[in-house]
Length: 598
Image (cartoon, rainbow, N blue to C red; front, side, top):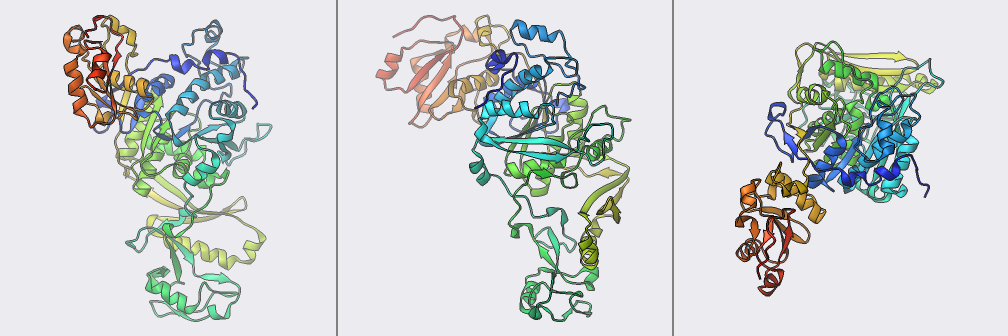
């Protein structure tokens, strides 16, 4: 396999291992709902440290990572600030922020991304996938890093997203797309069996007749050509007798049509006076295999996304944020990559697009997906979290909301069959008119565009939900236990020790500070005898004794050994084995006790 080399790689290759664990510190004032570390999270802090802090709880549990890292265009002014202990790295810091005239900017970008992608790989579940957007500046180096970490056989593919529809006349080539590269911990053939198909043209879903079965798509009940058994009169509910459109026949034979009517699958537009249409429910469709070209008409572009952001923050004069990603783009990735109970992580959170997409996906299908957002900049509260607050609670807005319903490039064949095209447009208008104040139909640049417009003067409805806003606390450095300084809480220390000992995430719902129980791994029940008090750690109560070992062994069903973290032990392993107690001592780095009683 071709290997990517860059200046500093030897120093950052395992740098993620040297990054200390830091506790996540909830801030109730900036959160919505009860502060929970196992719910939606928005974390303000360096994303390298934040990802390391998530490992004890979320290692191997994240189902989808969607990140939009710095593109390294030379105009972004991002800084490399990882505390890597090497003279080369210290030299680089002198030239921060990274600009176009920095001859090492590509090396710095690789050095910044490598340890973060290593941690993201550890956080991904065995069925999880990572989606990363980039442009031409770093896409080839980004893929080389991911090949190095995941293995090149684990690249699912590379997609092109149409980020803009206008032409940039100042460029050598007008940049219309960004790249979206997808890697998975499962091989592509295995991941293909795990991923979801896209709804078949689901943009036309609606429910104008309040069908209790839910939303459906209106399908014309006519077919091209002439079939004798599909030409017959149909009587509408208003009594009008209809023949098939000129040059066409009905979409099924008369007995099949009557069967569809009896099943409640026929819709009559124009209050029962229009041509019959068939109701197509999403669950009846086979779905579409995702392709590698995502058009702006399907998932939005940066211009529309910036406009939406300005609508959400209508009380602000301007937002100094360039080209935010549309939430529809991320929502499509989530639709493909996740089930309804998935965990979605974005460690370059920016304006909070990924959180918005998760909330929108949950509202659409009733899911319970959770998001984890990490943002290091000062706007983590005022922009990232504030957007999520407004999307959850709703926000004031005055203006026009516009939703594109249909777009088609016109050909000469379309003009020759204008009646069919007009019939399709009429069907969309009949289906969607109840949702909008006006349905607009325009032809622009050779495309027919149908859009719905709705005047909004008060509030945009919120999507609902909660989240916990967190910052990063002081590093959990186990050697500090020797001095009794900055003793971490039971939960913080316990989750770190559990993960270090088992290489599995700690389930916070099982943790019990009163009994000292941390949880169950594949091989152990894990315990911690600890209080963040120096006097306690100096007392006999902080040691593993024979009595304590007997109590712990009896507290859980037999079958697994018990791993007990404690500052000292007053019983030998030989005695524990003789008593057939499946208990092992794991010493805390606290050297107050050196006595072992046999």
